[in-house]
Image (cartoon, rainbow over all chains, first blue to last red; front, side):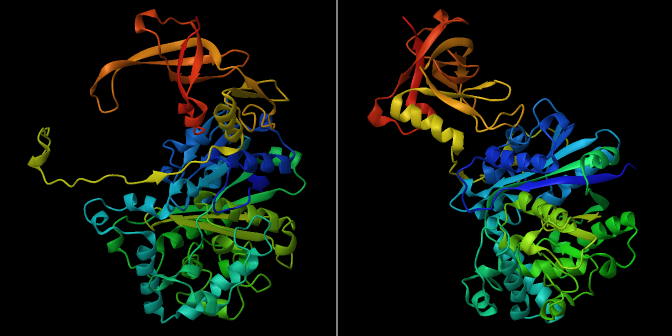
Length: 385
Length: 156
């Protein structure tokens, strides 16, 4: 398979309600990514668009809607969608467009405009559940994830205080991100005392709803070597789907993340992920999900992630920096764009361009992961220099 | 079970809707477009400074070369019928009491156009190439919407 590199990245600010339309947001991010790579639309062979449910923007066939702002005019274009996992799946699709030998340069654009759903995007989630067995109960994602968080806490004997440390860390990291929606330092007490939404989930355990877009430019090796002095290589990709019968799973452990990670590690030739991965951007829409996912990624033993966090290992200057960007909890959560933001973060970190967020010690390899559909899809990408 | 079910009550069913409401921003370029309709009864176009492509409604960026567009200008809401149709059924397949005329109107002095209703004309009198102009609601009733234009009517 051909080697594939990321050569440019861009993103909009993440905000609660943008004046820009979704396609205008897409254009801002896509243009920034191209500019950062020193390329123009003429250099782009194909476009991959990632966006989560059409319901958020309130536009059916959102791929077609976003295509002009994503640079797809007169080009082969495809939109992918695996729920919350979309933002990491889109660059995987960009990767196989190029690894197949079909295209040399691909623009990958992810967008979400959640403020369009009124009064709150949470209302759009009702329709993802089984319409006969579950929708009648009026589920929302807060209590669905509260069920998972409770199971995870109980199986491992983890406290809400330990989990709140993740929110504190990520929101603090986000203070250094110029695009972040939340610019507020919080304490464990703040998290515990914030509004109780669905026990054990309090408001500050959860990422905000956001509008935003992110983009990367990906190239085949021969192009990357010509256009970029510091290409960041795709070393591994993985994705995996578990059963959508979520009552048939044990929610304490994300097996689908483990299988996606194993696929990516095998491709990257990684045998000891804890030693060979230097930066991790796991999907953190809720604080407990960062811990849940670190375990699924085999970066620690099951039930051990809370201790790593308490010991400071996952701080930006710790032994295994986790969400140095500030993650979804701090930077914001425009679903697909949030996942791709994590890939952008790896790009900037591995090139030493992350500014105040820069992880010390010249990291060489990073992993980004997202998760979605009905809590059963894992997507993983490993980048390295 | 492969028999076609003609009576939905024969099998157990559950009725539901997709109950989602939205509030859409018109966007950066849309703000210019809809303010001109509301405040001045005009349509706004813009141009790509790189390739010269003309956009009506205006776009913030050129989709062909990704440049930021420029030269926003007011145009009179007049143009020609590029194509048209006469609708006899509504969205749910019910016959309309009065058939409705819809046209794609290319606006004079621009490369773009808008889709809208035709009024003050019989279906049998409409033709491709017909000159038409917008009929705006009175200023006090305009809200900054595409329906501030009631319809396009023939230029007499």
